[in-house]
Image 1 (cartoon, one colour):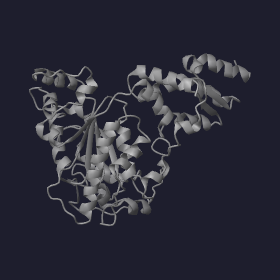
Image 2: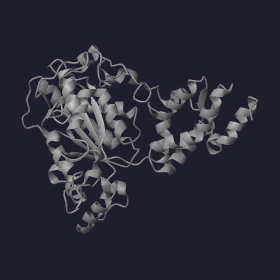
Image 3: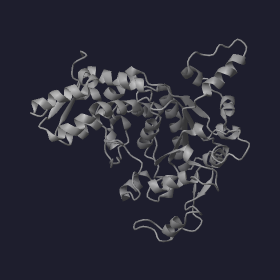
Length: 425
């Protein structure tokens, strides 16, 4: 393909009906992931009051209700469709997910494992490399409810701020009140590095206190379905919404089979690792921060500010790599959830067809790489380049245009040519 040739629709990857493209994905009972499109994947329940068939297809309240027979290679192959690069993270995550949910399945079938240690996951990596997308895509594939939150919103119990137990209650809300289904969900906490303890000389209500509260949840704890501090929630429990069952006093949800995945950028951790390696006889630390992250040990996280008990409950750890310019080009061209689909949809609402040229995409990738925010930089660049087109073209007779290198470098001049053709100046 020449640098100026059009990028064929087939080269952009199939249309994804996942998050951001289709707000109401339809669950599927198809059991073979290799034959499934994104739109027919089995999803976590995305609304508060799901349809009856959705609950029946995902409930884990009985032995017959939870079906998991995926293999790590199948999970990774599915993640490859939506997340570019991060092969090591995909492998590690695929194995951890399969181990966990196979354990859940066998436990539901009566094969107990009283000494099983849950494989909670710690993802390290800069912003915009696909961490959230990885977890959300995996949750949709498996068919379990998924909750994401930033760790910075929480404080120690009894202080102003969110309570970590609210994460578990959010899982229940995602399933429309089905506690049995929520007990096998995934909780994803981003910016976990921001709750590392600080030597402030006083009580650290947003750091070590939150770590302590998370400890019991990450292992095995019973959480009240309705918060004792939530007066409105207690009223709704007694007088539930139509279609939802009333709550019994003292009803709880157990976290034994809820998988916790946390992530953070961990700025400063490479320096801690480098100092540790430097003090070791005969060890020469790697030159790059990315390579240093691969050698992170428990002692490094403790030095960073985490409690030993907390970091010990995150046994599965893997570092995600920053995305290079070529990777950003592939994110647009190959990912099934490509940002380009969003722009095609936006212009298509006005009957305007957008055509993407390879040289234009490469220029967008180059500018996005300079932003330093990973894949999020693609949105920043595209909005800057195309905002005037989105404002002007819907009011004209223009029915198609191509995103070329010239357009990306000088969008105002290209738009002026288009408008001149329609008689507008």
